Image 1 (cartoon, rainbow, N blue to C red):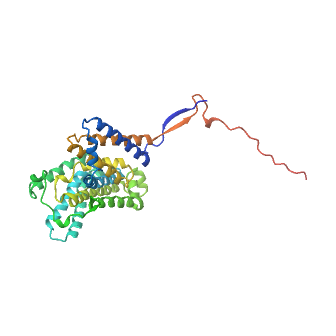
Image 2 (cartoon, rainbow, N blue to C red):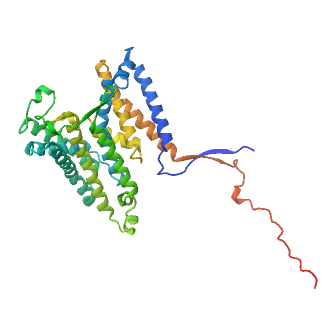
Length: 378
């Protein structure tokens, strides 16, 4: 007797486990590498990508620099997702956080370097949170989609940067090939240290520590409980005595603050000025990182490094004279494979009875004789 194998929905809200996500990302990278090789007639395409990433100390240094803002951007998006919202405005929050930090640096430059760094970081957190305040309020009280408002504010932040870098704070922008101000005080530069011939900035360490702290806070503190209720049903949150609207509001402000903090870290670690070079679609790549990492905050670190490798490889392709649009293709393939993994995790293969057979539950078990107790004669 043959049995029928069927594919059935197991859990509509399930996400792929870590091992499945790693396998699908590896498959996506393999497919991307093959397509990139076939799309170019250049024989040295793979060597160019290798030299721009793992094949040289300069490539590894570049990967670390690129990973720093990407990890923080992914964290900002992931915190928003924990409360059930999409923060698409990380780029704008990054620029506004860097602007607030630069304002402090230019008006309190006489302070000792360590104290000024702390003030700049707090200013960056505040600047990002303030820039996320309007989308948070309109989402909480007017039910305006936060994707639209955060996306539009990215363009406003870019215009804000153009005003300050070409007006009040303009300095040598044309020579740098980007809109830039003069440098912040040298005492605020974050320390760089070397591992062999590879230079690693303190900003990368700060980004990793921020992810670890956030993971611990959401795992062991009451904040994680509030975030879970904020992303669930409103009736459940109300029953638990938690305001879903308030939890989403505060969660989104924290997400914006982390976006602003990313701007400060990049400014102090790499750019050293308020500039359009602070971001190159960092927020949008952060979206991809948060999606690929799924529910794991600690997974933001390896996925952020992976995306930094992809971007660095794209830079190598550009140097070799090959279109860097292939980076968009690679990120798209990774998202496609990650989505396929999540879809696959929601289904299970079931082995059932052949058509026409009675269900197992419908077959009554055979009757068994109950034991009879014999009473001995008195």
